[in-house]
Image (tube, rainbow, N blue to C red; front, side):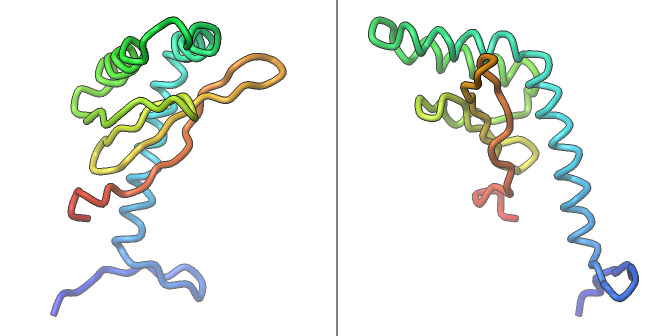
Length: 124
């Protein structure tokens, strides 16, 4: 029988696994936000250019650029794919599946995290 450490907060009991997942997700969020902060101009440029040139340029060029950008910041990431709609990328990092995508606002384009969830293929 395994013993799961628990923490008591008021009447709420939180097991150690839930705490570890929450801490991991916060750390991961910081990593992704850092990537987006450092590469926002390039990501938005790619998005804006794709909006204008998608009839004339091949998608592979954009996919390659996004893959290189993700791996530049996180060599241990596994790039899964770039997506046209919504324009963005999907990759795994630290056994978590990440999806980032662009949105168009009245001020211009913006890139942000869409989803962070445990990767089903990681065995978690």
